[in-house]
Amino acid sequence: MAISREFYEMMPHTVTVYGSSTINKYGKQAWGGSGTNYRCRLVWDQRMVRSTDGREILEAGQAIVYGVATVDVNDRISLPDGSSPLVTSVEQIKDEVGDHHSVIGFGA
Image 1: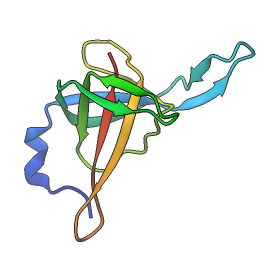
Image 2 (image 1 turned 180 degrees about the vertical axis):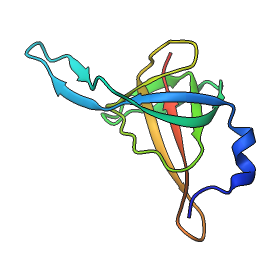
Image 3 (image 1 turned 90 degrees about the vertical axis):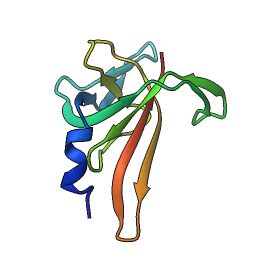
């Protein structure tokens, strides 16, 4: 079950998620050309998180997604101001019924 309709008005922002596609011959990450839009609420709250390789990194904020997003830490998001920070963490929040919503953490 997804997030209830009453929360829709509390999600005034839209982010676009670009999926990780390839790594070029120089070891640089490339992302897909077309992204997926998600309705969300942006929260600018800095916190230290642990990356997938165990390093501590500073997270600039989180996007609380209306519903469940298909996102990976190798993806990139585009914020409403046009910036494209890296995804630092992804949490799938569950309730007693199942998947409820996603929280996407992003860097500076």
